[in-house]
Image 1 (spheres, rainbow, N blue to C red):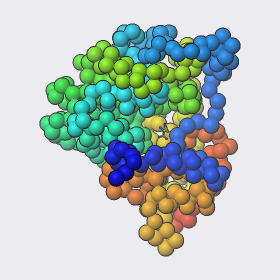
Image 2 (cartoon, helix red, strand yellow):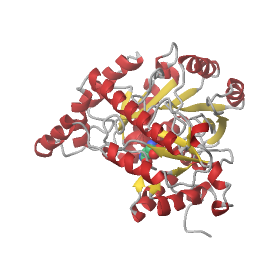
Image 3 (cartoon, rainbow, N blue to C red):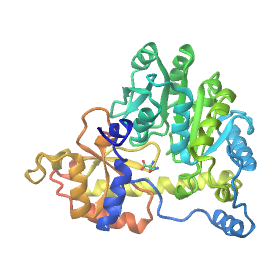
Image 4 (tube, protein in one colour):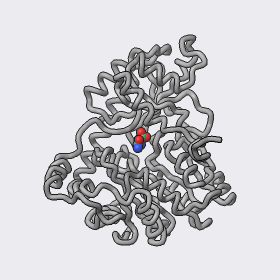
Length: 402
Ligand code: GLN
């Protein structure tokens, strides 16, 4: 008999985070786990320095510092059109990671079904297992990453209590349109279910695409648990600040789960991030511009090398098709995971194997991110150019593929 619980035997550690460790061990350029290599805006660092002396250094209110909740509620009214009460409808968590887990534990009983789009951010698999929920996978079908509303309706008929919606989507970069979200929302209301969103890339959306928070669509605020984070928006992934906004009954119950899981997010960091939220609309414009430039620059580099990739509508991820390499004798019978290990050691660039995102047996994709300074992206491209591209890049323009 194992000394460990059955639960921990049912999932692995995060492949995304594992790739970072392997990358570090070999000194590769880490384009696997998505986080920026540049500093947060100066006002945040200044605030953090000030708070080091002025405090707070002790617990905040478990569900989050009042001024941070108020600040987020104001921003959500501006961006989503939802007027959330900062006292009863906003909960500050340790990253969106905790928010998602907490949301699942709050609305799912063991054995309940939840719908998850595939490809999906790998945490949702573990969230489902740890909350006892059983995932029903809804394929996002390339090249447009479309989905079938009939499949979603069937999922609700089969008893799904919630649908997990990562928008913009990690890893495929899909930004759901207002029409798609409206159609999903109609089904959610019809079956009196929830949408649990993960909107951490909400401010990294490339024109002409536009981010829509499903909570803001008519009738949806009462059916949506919006999870998001300040990590990506302010380049502070290590601060572990996320939040959940939703209907009062859900948030009040989620506060209990959160309280016993973590007590609270780091108080000094909650205080310091207010300086970021005070930056105003111009900050988000600049952020979008920065990432649009990075995306365009990196994708153009991939095109020059002749790597086949999708064109993300949002997020800082891009999927590369490695089919042509896997056909070579050198890589015969390799999994995408083994290919990524080879790439770290021999090419010096770390990626995440696509299989860790797909329910379907997909072995031909790897994910890279471009949240890196220009010099690092240049060096990564120089290294990627050593991949044994066999086709004629000129004849093979960028295309969307799975
Ligand atoms: N969302 C990031 C990614 O997919 C990582 C987040 C994390 O590791 N907590 O790479």
